Length: 91
Image 1: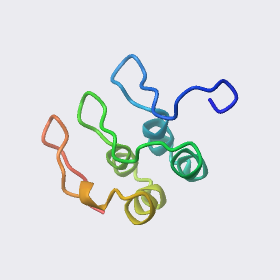
Image 2: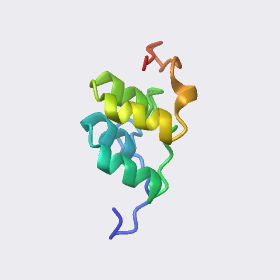
Image 3: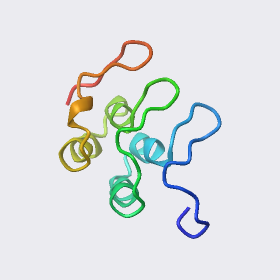
Image 4: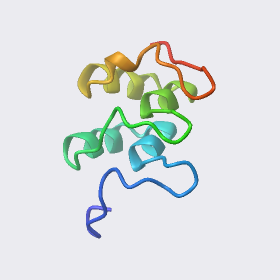
């Protein structure tokens, strides 16, 4: 992404999830940090289902990623927010 000049928040075609969504889903804290701090990814971006990177991290049990998003990336206000199906996250 960095070498090709692709935007950090480029959504996929399936549900509009960004690279940050997928890094959070996979529990890749080093990639999450890089995407937010260096590439300027939006930690609060929701995909077409209303899911945020924080939701993905919590759904998959990646506590370290979830905590970092809340503490360092400004996602604290997303705690308790619901997605399109009414599901939320607890940290």
